Length: 133
Image (tube, rainbow, N blue to C red; front, side, top):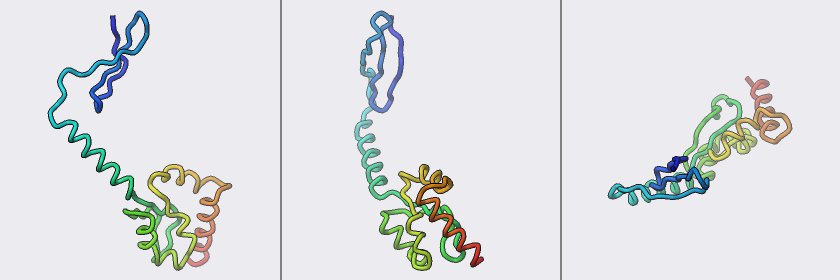
């Protein structure tokens, strides 16, 4: 007697565990769609291209007429910094609060957690905005 544990559709391989020995047994799906391998390769290439270029996000406070919280910059870090150059020239700490999409979830938590650089830089910029606003 066999029991299906998990099925991974992208590789068309299903893992099956036998009830007697509890050892995994792999089996191939019977019919693989024609052209599926080429489609998977195209998807993988597109993912690699996106991750190589990626996006960057400003997680600092709104700075009037300069930059807004959550501004997204597509492309490389250098391109993101070039697009935010006016804000960086006015407030150099803006550069430290432009983070990669890969670390965005963690950085958004850190910016609200005392005891790290992102938090300190956010507070410094927020304080300047209140004084100037």
